[in-house]
Length: 253
Image (cartoon, rainbow, N blue to C red):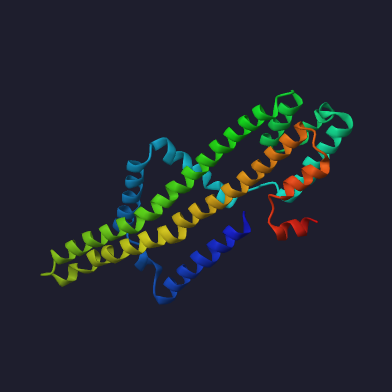
């Protein structure tokens, strides 16, 4: 599990649950009608906004929030620099057998196209289109969770209105006011909780993951084009270091 995700769950969820239990039984905050209103309303509104396939598919992306393995940009530089050096010394066909050892399919495809003799413009066009499509898929996933984070508090307010109406309709019997009042308050609680501790943080984490992955792909694209063009390995190294922040660049050096 990603350590920052684990810490976020522990701090955010743990402190909220602890504060609830300190004030009284946790069962006070369990109300099934309120949950049905918030979860059902949020999912219904999301399905109205997006196709079913996109909504169902985005939940598979959630695993990237908890389990994410990505190659470090710093480690990518010596890999591509080594390929550039070998290409200049022994020819671009010399590292064809080494492609099987590369874990990144995007980089492997790019190097294979260079080995196959494709022109730089064609390689750049193919890989740039793939980067664009990946970026769009990631954008859609984060957008859906952002939309759910927007809908959840609004649906919670809708549940509050429902609870208040039910309460006002039973004012003649004070003993029956408690349950509608609980629905009124807990729907707002559930909507706010889901939006600010689940949906919006997931959307933010997916955006961060997307930026990290796109950066790696852009570095790989730049390296493949430089290798195919026959650039010196030191030139390739400097081109790739330009993608890194100054502090990361100094750390790598």
